[in-house]
Figure (cartoon, one colour):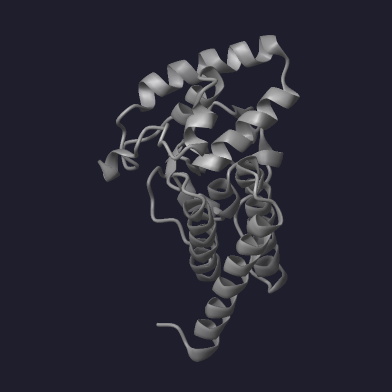
Amino acid sequence: MLNEYEYNDLKNYDELTTKHFKKRLKENRSPIFVINLSSDLHKMTDNLISSVKKKGTRFGCENGCSYCCTLRVESFAPEIFYITKQLKNKMKVSELDILISKLKDYSDQAKGLKAEQHLLPCVFLDNGKCSIYSFRPATCRKYNSMDAEICKEPFSLVPESSEIVYKSQLLFRSFMNSVAQKKMSPYTHELGQSLFIALTDNSSEKRWINGEQVFPTLPEAV
């Protein structure tokens, strides 16, 4: 149970994050800006992790640690398009073709898998490191284990910072609500399957902006 200080701290954080996204969307009403707002989500997630670390919390995660990179990554629809844009800007056509082929194979394996069944190495995992680390999803950014040894066992109950758990939920909800207010689908989807669609279907972004849900629904939500 939360004490009064913790409750007020979470309440203030919720109000601040909600206010931030509302303000940003008023500043730029272009539908494309909703996709670019993913960058704010990433920075705010990183700031949350940093603030908890400054308070003395120590995590077991280290450079090269990738035990969690076989678990299912759920990413927001605008994030998926944001990551797609980053990939297209940073990769050569030949490199993109190779990635799309990998995503196709990955998607065939991941299709229909629930979270407790998903144990597939992320296509962006390269020698134990994330090859899209600078623009990785918010879900990956907020995932920090207090004990990496426990992470060695797939689907184990990983000890996390309660502050990060609570505040990231509030942050993600504020982001989702802002997207929904623009009449766009705010839900999360499995990253690999969704990126394959975004990279191979040129109409997917426009259809999403027009309110269509273009990515597969998570099996648990069906």
